[in-house]
Image (cartoon, rainbow, N blue to C red; front, top):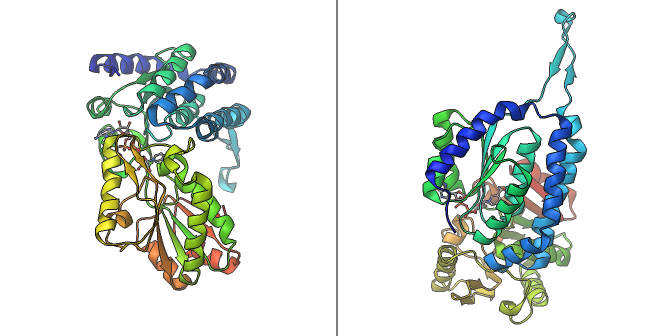
Amino acid sequence: MNYTSISEIHQQFEAQRQFKEKNRKLSLEKRLSGLQKLEANILNSEKEIQDALYKDFKKSNVETSITEFSPTLNELKFVQENLHKWMKPQKVPSPLKYLTLRGKILSEPKGNSLIITPWNYPFFLPMTHSISSLAAGNTVMLKLSELTPNINLVIEKIIKNTFLPEQMKVIFGSVEETTEILKLKFDHIHFTGSPKVGKIVMEAASKNLSDITLELGGKSPAVIDADSDLKSAVKSLIWGKFVNAGQTCIAPDYILADISIKTELEKILKEEIQKAFGDEPQNSKDFARIINQKNFKRITEYIEELKNLNVPFLCGGNLNENELYISPTVVSEPPNETKIMQDEIFGPILPLIYFENSEDAVKQIRSKEKPLSLYIFSKNNHFIQKIISETSSGSVCVND
Ligand code: NAD
């Protein structure tokens, strides 16, 4: 895939910078008509989107529909239904001593925005962040991940058919191009990706005092209480963990379960994984591949370390490098110092660790970085409330 040249990046940036004042005056109707055109062009491209994602990492059509295509259309619908409310000035009551004054909050566009996206939901993430930014009256420079060339070309085509380049432009590139873009002064930068690159982006944004939103990754635990619907919890977790082959920012990273249900949990997990993917998960058309060699090697190293330490594998641990395939894998009680318990896994390996009581569960969650998401499976409201109130995470999901 040809990357956007540095001179074109500068030229496009200048064009958007000049256009942003005109763009900010776009009426509600004009913004909505841009989004309607985008919706029509996405609907006309469904097959191309499916084919491109299959070529990029064997993502199945069903997964594409559930995790890329439909959520993008839902976002478009939500924004189109609500934009008039969000654009409306809000009256603010004046305090008694300023009784003669009238206050209002006016929402305004930020100006020119830069959106940098990862590869793991390579249609939904770029589109959803762009939809928000365009609806808010900003121009958009969209830097896509270099790891998904096929879907990138489809996105570029859709955007070219919908918007003027000074309003929205797709940029292809890797580290060199992104480093160059980050030298430019944007009014807002929206970055989705790893914490490591997030730090680089934040440092670059600080040099221009650009506003910034960071959507990063991390380790998201799934806590299972002894008093829970275990079978239903396991089914949910298998879906959440192995969809996109575990390459999801909010995938349950590891299970933290009550030690008293260890035997039953491990038995049900093995049975349900077998039911979901069969004896040969490699032949399942519903199981995606690892995105590239670098990530395959990273995940393989986790597996090798666990095998060297004789950590029990309940299932999986099978690899096929030519296909970038790693089977759905479950390991029991890896030591806390192993890489798999320190890094964000971002692959189809599910470690199981255990707690003695709710105090211990809280302590174990708090011993790691704040999770992006936290999943709790329990019928006991006291347990649920304890975990919620004594830990902090980006979001909490109970019994789902
Ligand atoms: P990444 O951080 O490697 O890359 C993200 C983007 O940054 C890509 O466009 C890439 O080209 C660019 N980039 C990479 N190295 C760079 C550098 N040195 N300087 C400037 N730009 C650089 O992430 P990834 O591997 O594409 O995606 C996986 C990560 O994204 C995981 O950590 C995952 O949790 C996270 N993620 C978070 C969310 C969320 O909403 N919070 C959603 C999806 C993914």
